[in-house]
Image 1 (cartoon, one colour):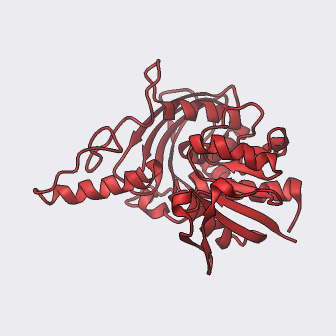
Image 2 (cartoon, rainbow, N blue to C red; image 1 turned 30 degrees about the vertical axis):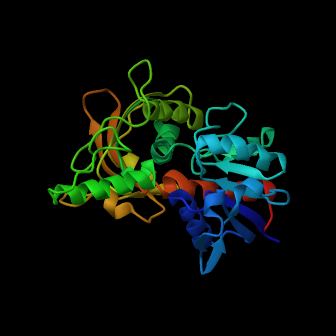
Length: 340
């Protein structure tokens, strides 16, 4: 007997990717339903070799469903997630709404799979921010070996992290640059994104950081270790899919770069491609559609006593969102629900 699964927000980029990954990984589901807002009622979405018609989220009864993978914004999640949870359906939420709730586990299965067992307090499990998810996959095995004191990270985040509107804006502005008769002013982003970079993701906070940067700090502490100090600069770049991060790590103990590579090669969810030659590293274009978090450019940082630098790349629609949600569902099934 398999699971009954609902994918909420099935017409969006992440929702569609959730359906793709459920099919790809042959998740043991007896039934998968696609849910969306009323205006998308009847819209067809793909699930493996099947086509599903979207049902109306507003009138859907979650009773009898085991898990619901949510890929809608925080405002809508605030309305529908408690309804699903109350009906006995475990919510796996991709929004930021519950990430910092002490009664809701924040889970990256390669890092803290045991945390799923805390789902029962609210019947909700939170998926971390896309930029955090890939970074902590790399940090955890290194932290287990040498104890991380401090992380300095600069991100290079693709426009798909801002949804379909972000990708459309990059596409339209890029075309307009080659067509002088067109003008595509910034709408989704605060400045032109085509052929530009924007050091601003989410809203500004009182201390001058953005909320995206704050998320990376708070989530790393919750997922890996509250004692780790983190400082982040998050930048939007003109890339369609794939987030990249330059990560500087300071450890309590010395960790040789060769040992760090070996540790990362053995760690779940990571692929190390690190040759000191032209093209001997991974760029975001190459990670699209892959499950792995790719690590390159591992090297000592001689400016601090126990320092290491690395380059971290992942498909943000997959590991940063849809894949991690499906992995949470798999982990919950294996450790707690035990069906299928």
